[in-house]
Figure 1 (tube, protein in one colour):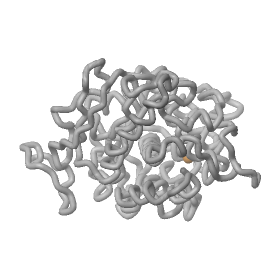
Figure 2 (cartoon, helix red, strand yellow):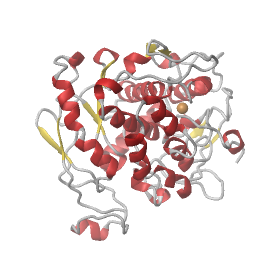
Figure 3 (cartoon, rainbow, N blue to C red):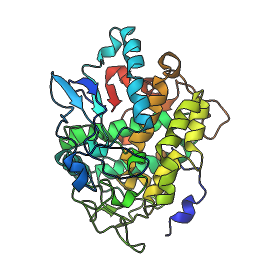
Figure 4 (cartoon, rainbow, N blue to C red):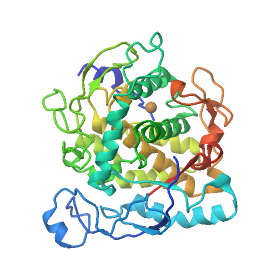
Amino acid sequence: MHVTSLVAGALLLGASHATITIVVTATTTICPVPSPTRTCDTSPESSVASTPTEPSSAYSSSTAAASSTVIARAYPADIVDRLRDSTMDKLKTYLQGQPSNRGCTLENVSVRREWSDLSVAEREQYIAAVKCLQSTSPKSPKHLVPGARSRFDDFVATHINQTNSIHGTANFLSWHRYYVWTYEKALREECGYSGFQPYWNWDRYAADPANSPLFNGNASSMSGNSENGGCVTSGPFSSLQVNLGPGFSLAYRPRCLKRDISKSQAAQTTADKTYALITRSRDIASFQDTMQAVPGVHAGGHFTIGGDPGSDIYASPGDPVFYLHHAMIDRVWWIWQMQDLPSRLTQVAGSVAGSGRPGTGNDLVDLGVNAPAVAINDLLDTMGGLDGQMCYIYL
Ligand SMILES: [Cu+2]
């Protein structure tokens, strides 16, 4: 694959509100990936379903209004899920000391959920919104980004443009948080999507990603794998035209989507590794360095997708799975922050690209045509950042 050399060995990368009362249950009704290390119950579904298509019937939409909502996971909770659940109390306690919190509360917060925890209809609604973005005219000026053909490409171009200043740097986490949030906002405001950005819990599919609900090629998947290095031919993005890249190119280079889904890369993203990252990183410097190391969960997720543009450090957002991967990156950061909110909601470390200067919370994060530039400090808190516009958590 022509793009592989570009990234070989590279230190790759890095809402509005619904009313909800969050009651996370440990209930699981299906065991979609039978494994000797996993336990699951023996409900009728589990004996017939080798691949889950529908979460538990006890599941209720996070967009349901006002009433108490029980959210069950479609897979058994892994060790990171359990850490997330057990530290929600810390978040509640912290919020009690922040009476207004710029209008963002646990009663009105948006909840981003895992791909398989969405119903099939919700997954298809997300896919339809992404396809809408891919068929909406770009905002990028033609003389700056001649290859952009859609709003989706505007995002790809912004990442290509800034790749060298947003990875291995002080703004890595906050830049990508703002990027995914702005993408979610575009899906909702420009394409009528009523859900929130889903994430990819790597561990769920790590044993066999190509046969997972994310990549199995069904109409409700994010499309399948390539065969023999060819184009992706199954699923909703089989006709996706990749326009930008490879590498730093912003020219019009139309080509098909290719993937090279990798079990060995997925093995770098299992829950034990993510848990160690969260629990052993004492400060933001070690957290972000460990996360972006190779091997590590960040690179591991990108190279689980592989192919073109998935393995291309510049153009990787041209594969729409990018946004689910980076939502998980953001979730892991959020869980890490939750372990010590008063301290970790303000921590920034690392340097500014192109200078030896340490980054600070006052440095600006710029998404070009997609959003106004804002300070890193405005992006550190998912519950109240951007003057309260940013208001979400993860299941
Ligand atoms: Cu990136």
